[in-house]
Image (cartoon, rainbow, N blue to C red; front, side):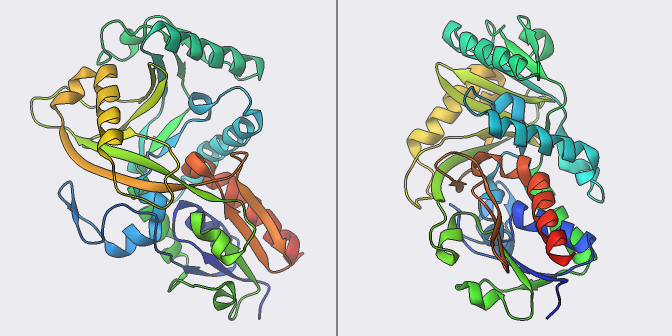
Amino acid sequence: MSKDSLAVIGGGVIGLAVARRALLDGLSVRVHRTLGGLGVPPGRRRGGERSDPGNMGSWGASWVAGGMLTPHSEGWPGEEQLLQLGLESLRLWHAGFLDGLPADVVTARESLVVGVDRADATDLRTVADWLSAQGHPVTVTTTARDTEPLLAQGIRHGFLAADELAVDNRKLVGALEAHCEQLGVQWAAPVERLDDARDGVETVVIANGIDAPALWPGLQVRPVKGEVLRLRWRRGCMPVPQRVVRARVHGRSVYLVPRADGVVVGATQYEHGRDTAPSVTGVRELLDDACEVMPALGEYELAECAAGLRPMTPDNMPIVGRLDDHTLVATGHGRSGFLLAPWTAERIAAELIGARA
């Protein structure tokens, strides 16, 4: 058994980011793909594209994510530590995490955050002031429609975060898989017990989201349901927005994330066990809020409704680090899995390098 061998349990964005970094560091890596966290059966046509059963299952919540890399936009007073992690990880996205991946995985390079009514605008001003107090000011605006003309008339207040990004979640995870293959990864079947992954390797990384407690009892991770919609542009419709638009709509949050062929709308968030069936109420609220922010979306095609299960922790902070001499964990990323993928890969890499020294 070599110190340069690693097994990663989990084939979503976190597991693949960890595996790729380990491969780049010269380790022999085996990835055990996992199943679960999806609201659409394998093989069903989703908005015209034939789903890959392996991808849908192994990617888990990564399949239905919005792909936003937006620590400023998602920040809230009281979450200072999560903000710092997000900003550090965003820097890593810009500093090289995208190296070796296709350019078209990035779908937006700026975020606009707006409020629909006066109370919403007040909330955004609170966030902007808090960000400024943390040393991370954003550009406040009272002319939001000059930046994004597709916004509804009357929406004026908000702020811009110029260095935030968005990625196509499915293209990105597919690209990470392809890069891992180029680097010599070994793919393996799902495991039901931690010992099943230990064969022939020095270290195992548990990165299977909501299922991590089944492998290591005591991990405080629970599933939180989130519904996401995909709207497809049709001929004659207004063009797809070029930036992420996040909005507060009478106290609720909604995001609109550009894709090459339309917009991703999300996301609800509520405790419902492991139920991944999109609900009428959730879908209706997302559509109502999206169209209140950007009325032109009402002419787009409703191409897909899906739901995933975010791995949440009691304090909303990810669980990343060492469990014992031969086991590491990377889970509990909640709504920030894509954003925190580079930071997580670096944190796990540091642990592995320390063990090899």
